[in-house]
Image 1 (cartoon, rainbow, N blue to C red):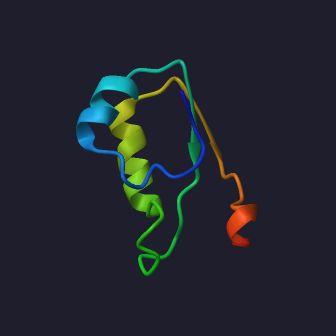
Image 2: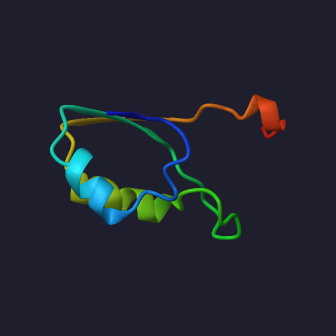
Length: 70
């Protein structure tokens, strides 16, 4: 599964249906501040990974160059 950005709003049903027991999950790396409400909080990401149980995980992030956010 390739989901490197904007997974904040994924509902549990989508995660259950498409993200469980994958061979490889390429996922955004989350953020370490709870003040940013539009990104996945890193501890929540870790819980998601424990639930999904992918064999391998690659954490990355694609920059939003069009929004000039670095």
